[in-house]
Length: 120
Image 1 (cartoon, rainbow, N blue to C red):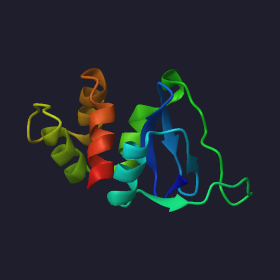
Image 2 (cartoon, rainbow, N blue to C red):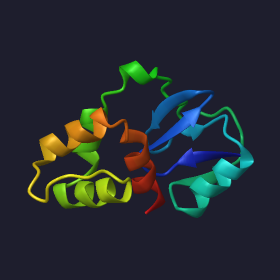
Image 3 (tube, rainbow, N blue to C red):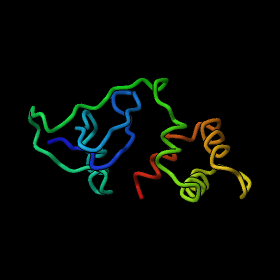
């Protein structure tokens, strides 16, 4: 069996960071990672078949991903501040969303932030 994304998630697949949209099949991942994504409600189990209803993941190199846009689209300012705190980033309480996103990218914490969002 494989799994299908239920919401937008980021996963590392074959040493590449891939952003998956709802409905995209997630392959290949370890059984443990598949189970984790299903347990947190980010994906669901599907029978493996070659049908048109399951879209293949868009394979993007890390350099092709617009991390700024992902963080800006997926988080409101309060959610982003909370996720940044959980990832161990220090910042002033009155930091703007734009500056916080740039700080997250500068400190190479984007994947930590996205993983925190998926686990919620």
